[in-house]
Image (cartoon, rainbow, N blue to C red; front, side, top):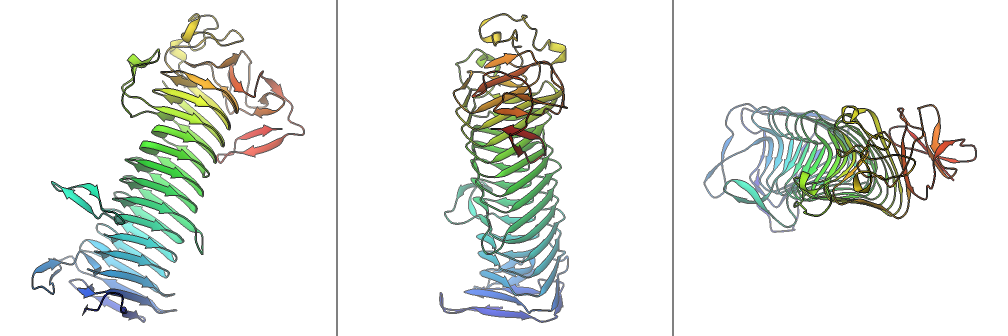
Length: 472
């Protein structure tokens, strides 16, 4: 297609009406158009399939280029309509646009050798049902940036964006599920967004930001992090379930937990960032290493254990409901390589087995006083971690803290209470039913003592993984 137009003076339409288009090159190629619109006519079934040879074509300036997808547009492309489209990209990608790509509706299935759908400038999905398979690449990709020595270094303002604001997107990717050079945003508009990702690489990865403002998101990463960004993650709403080989949620700079419902079913490290701000929402995390880990920033030289850390990191809990658990050898549930602070919200911590058995755990008078001992009720801390492990100290001035396990570095308050998974423990205003057993409970904030509790008359909060917290 070569239909040059004056900027903002109309679109060029392609209507697919029970069309089957197969070619050894790119079956649908837009060389030049202000904006092309691909219409999937209601009630029709359409197929576009390319070959696996090199898709050379001549641009309007006379130079040669390669069409890198079965449906390839050098200018803006919109896809809309109530029809069905199946795309088979045997050469490289399934659908690719060099500028801005918008998908508004339709039932679209893409199977591609590399990336399933790529909007280099940006990619917006506002509706429809997308089933995407990327055999050796990403499910969704937007990678426009300024390159330095072949690497993406400088973000282009307004580009490199993937914006999912509706529809149902299912991705199976050999590399990353969703990959953006700038940011990813998932939200709800006229219809709820549903995103399901299975990836060998990262599930969702962005250079700067990931915003989850709504939707229902399920991410399985069999070889890496589920959500990953080099800057910040903002969890503002929606429901998120992740299973990860490495980190569940990872931000090199800051993580903001504000309003999302998050279930980290399993991960090596559940939630990790240099600074974690838990301001709201409801979360449950299970990890086989660190549950929450404030780490990755510049190493700090203050704090009694600073000499043992390779980085700094901080965790601040001011609101929301958060359950964190870990199981394994040498685990930390709440781990900050700098400081930990709690001013509000509910924080439930639990070691669900193994951990520091061979290091002594709470020796009940073993390590002595000061930073390595203390606590109340005869508990004393170990030097290696466990429930709460910070280098610069843990301070609690409000909220509800209940932590179940026999091992910890920091001890706000501690009581030797034998507990199991059949009863609730805590106070008359805040209680939790553990999933394991032990003989020490750490507590703080509005909880001033702990014991077995009868929960009649209390209100239940169910965490996303099903564990139960009761309060008055």
